[in-house]
Length: 191
Image (spheres, rainbow, N blue to C red):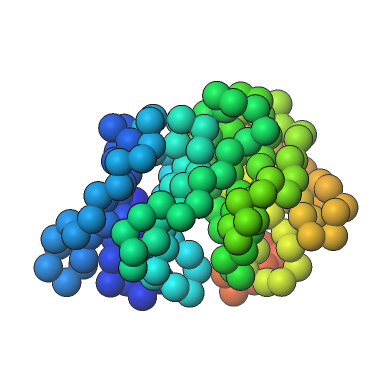
């Protein structure tokens, strides 16, 4: 589930592939999207706006839903059919969408405007568990994986992996510090 940037909406996704959008004021579901053919694995609103919600799914698609026209306006897919997606993030500009996969262990980058696949980041050795964009304009992306690592990528400068942080167990999530883009926090399966 996810809150909209203004806190007025909540979006939820289920194993049934349905995406529901609710108002926080009166807790009413005002729309349901039924386009996915697999369970929803992650959900987020466009940064700084509440007019679109994006979802990743086990069906191998990322879908963008317009909350004014109530329809799917963009479908993004990895280059290989049947690639289950595990997590999702959108950069601060709202232009670049990223999703991690279960197998192969890649991170995919798309243009939200065109839906075109921009890049494939390879380097993890197990499913991707979480993705986070830096709030700054430096173009950094953090990815975590069940391979016990967190990788920091320079996606706009095309420098690839900047740094790899080893952990003692599977990494469940990673987030950049919104007030200090040089810091990340991680959670792992065991202490």
